[in-house]
Length: 124
Image 1 (cartoon, rainbow, N blue to C red):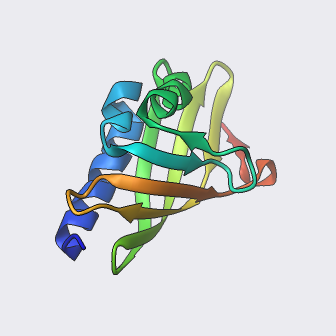
Image 2: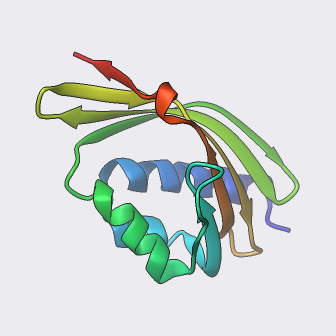
Image 3: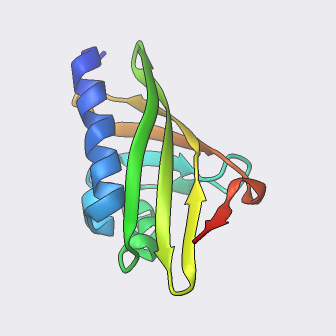
């Protein structure tokens, strides 16, 4: 089981990569055979190549990300964060709660994002 500090660092790296990295940067934080369910209830994405494709939609967007709360227990983390995405006519904000598990190396093995379309708010 990874140390709590390794998990905390992995979450920080994830949020930074989501805000300013490429799809490959985000996917590199995942184990090769990881799964991603974003949002929960959607078809899971399996494997790093598919995860890279999933995050490719973020590459040309300007985003600010702020961690609001983080809890680490065992090999897992649950965290609440805010994402503000700049759009041509304003911005969209969402505050998902992600739950992740990690391997010994601190790579994400599962990610489940808790949010729904009703949680996305348009801002000016």
